[in-house]
Length: 430
Image (tube, rainbow, N blue to C red; front, side):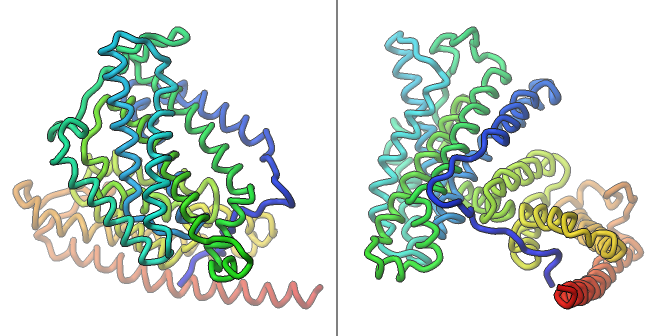
């Protein structure tokens, strides 16, 4: 069962190297400048900082997954190492009594991980697919295990802490406020996003797409698929290092957790859920998953389970990701078939909402009689009072989950049938 039309596409360049239009980038810059004016307060700005960092991290991962077709299971290695490099540079400069523009410090993290990415990419890029994924996982675990052997580099269990204000002010910013750090993150996100967008339209970007689609044919044409993979890996590592450096500036601490497999899995989920074949897909995924991680963790202990369920939903129902669903909706509006399909789409939304509510009820009831039994049987979920010890609460949850799922499947079948009929009618009219 697939809902909507999967129209997610690769980055299709025009002939030659086309620099993207300036309009969307000016709009993005205006949006980034205005966000702190709308979401005021240190807590809201700190959330924006985290989302900006993860958006850049996800974009860097998509250079591998979406553009080159490489599944890396250790991308967080370069995120963490970039952060540690920035921490050591700030500590070294402050000990020497030197001042340096703080907004430029993440560049060192990016350059360091770019060089490390060349070496690691040379080791991992001989083959794609599962061998590449396993090698990146092994390299990641080696770096993570080395933390116990080199405490002077990684710090102890508490990590390495810094004070970003020790480098002095820059252009009137002392970087004591999260808003000051936000503008540093926003600037780097905009610059790096533009560079990655431009990269996809260079000869290297086109070769990366070709390696993703058919590496053997590329070899027959005289190009080295291994070299293309290695360069893509190194470039993605460099951008991940910039994101890690921004994380070090924002949180003023870097721990070995940022090198862990869990962090690599998180960026994989963000990128895939957002959509790997649309440029803004990883940004959308980072925002959605980042907000879920921040808000759901305060609401329910099952927040990681919801991550997994959303990932399964995207894989099974919407392989184009959230961005593919957005573009599918835009395509539907442009096709002028929205009025015809509106009743069935509304039915899909209602039955789907009932299914989601039922699944949430089941999960929360299960946690309440299990891990959270000490809190008592009574709970309120989505505004509905439930009793974990009441059969009626369980029956309600099951009815919504099972009945909503069956109804959704039936309505989607009718919707697909209607679309086939409309396609045949339009083809006959032509």
